[in-house]
Length: 397
Image 1 (cartoon, rainbow, N blue to C red):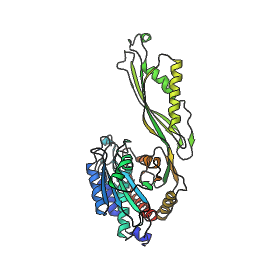
Image 2: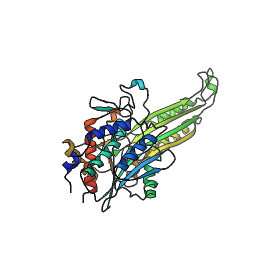
Image 3: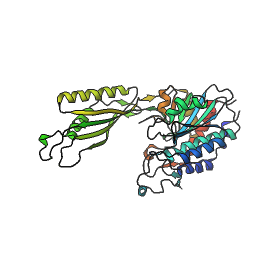
Image 4: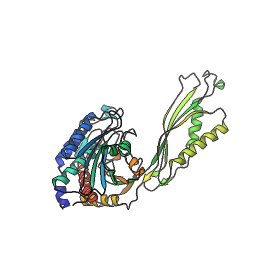
């Protein structure tokens, strides 16, 4: 049995930095989601570690890369994973450094995906490399994951891996999962649920100078939106207050025509232990109330485009306790147990009965923003925590 200090001493910090930079320089913007370059890097790195590698592709161009290290006993399986896709970079002129340059300045690696979450992909690889180079032999199985389509909530990423990919490859199903999402080295184990609505309201056109002869779809939609936003917003100690956001609205063709159509989209987020059914029940009742008040209201479409219940794992769960100890050992501080506005890839894990948490080096405030970066000292710390967690969860022989 190797000493933990020996494992930590084997972590190649320079290699970790360079691999993170290499991954940032492999753009994988989603949409549209071009994964060829970044998935190729992940496959190559997994194979260098001696893992059994499976490309779990639910549809062409959506290659989840999963690596398996089989333990001597295989009584349980631990998975460390991250997603390969990143959001668009936006206006390049808003960036201090090239968005896909992976440049190092001021103790940080800059670029789109540096925090969310190419740093975690590099961190899991370097963590296992340190474990293996120290000579540790594991009883439990270890899965390393690089998934697709987290940023678009697509079904071909972690959902496909858990429901079909692992079984088809003959890989074990994980018993616990750590996703290296942005958490600033705290533990995130409580997650808001979300319901996304697309609503289309139909009116009747008329001359803009004689609106009394028409039915203004935009005005009808505004009244309906205001009624929907009257839903009770509850508070949760970790994820905060429920929210309703009007994210998109479109209607009308010309200023001098009464608009015939108006389409809007709502993002409703709620904390545990609520169910999204509460939101759906309220929205449907709001439509019924408004129709009773206004017979001219014609709701032509009321579609739920995303439906995820809020989820959480207990703060006293074994994995949470392990990661708390490992963060304390690496950084000297006890991490907070926090909540987040969404669960990402963990949704499919926890929903299917596999407990999991987030632990990553990235910060929420720089994710999806210009001038995204990851701090190198936290990148190194996160990878060390991943290494220690492998020893703790998979256990040494």
